[in-house]
Amino acid sequence: MNKQWTDTFRTEIENFKGAIGSFDKGEIDRKAYKGVSGGLGSYAQRDASKHMLRLRLPGGRLTLERLEFLAQVVERAREDGCIVHEDGDIASGQEAWEDFLKAASSGEAASVRLVNYYTLDDPSRYDPDYYESIKDDYPLLFVSDLSFDGKTYTVSGLEDGERWTQTYSHLKRFEDQAETHSAVYDSYIRYVLVDDDTVTWRQLMHGALSSQFGDYIPFHSVYTDYVYNE
Image 1 (cartoon, rainbow, N blue to C red):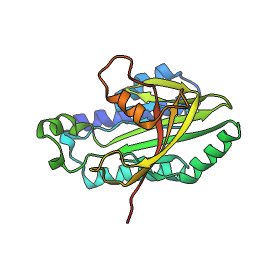
Image 2 (image 1 turned 90 degrees about the vertical axis):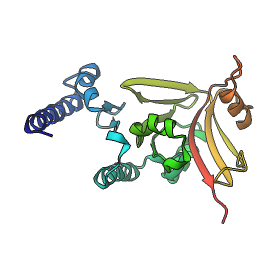
Image 3 (image 1 turned 135 degrees about the horizontal axis):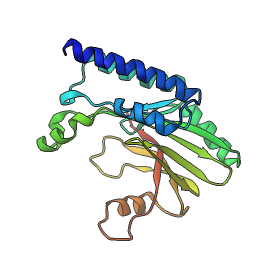
Image 4 (image 1 turned 180 degrees about the vertical axis):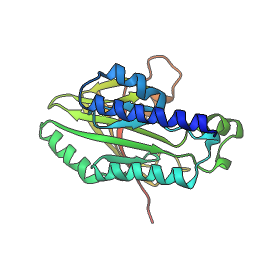
């Protein structure tokens, strides 16, 4: 990278730092902030002091320095009491999750932040063309907020700079043996947001995979604990 590009990036970073401060103080609105932050892959969360960062790695290559940075981000999420999933499995925040469940089951308002971190598996496990098409998108880090107001569950987050929000009537617990014999885990515990309290996990998966119109049942998985027997 030549000096011109280095100086340009340094200027953009300084402008970004200034925009973060202004947004945090309420001096600029979310739309104005997005105009600065979106180009740098950062998006504001509901709490103006917290942000989501989307990372793209050239050629899908993850250096030791980049890996250390991502590890620091995930560790900070742990320290902040977030519910952290790594590659779809709970990694930290079980106590915070139990507190959320206890409050919700008592009809009390509660909220928790969810952090999901995904990496790619061994390249040999993928079709070569498919691996080439997705490798630049990993690792991925997603942040969302789950809340309960005493009646309704709401989950929201940001994707591609746009906020999404979903509401559900129930938080349902599923516990069973692994769905297939090829699964690397033996059993699972899942908490899933649904509107139909009688629906089964098998029905949700059938609807998600079916090509038939009307089979899909809206749901949002918020907690997964894979159990491995010794």
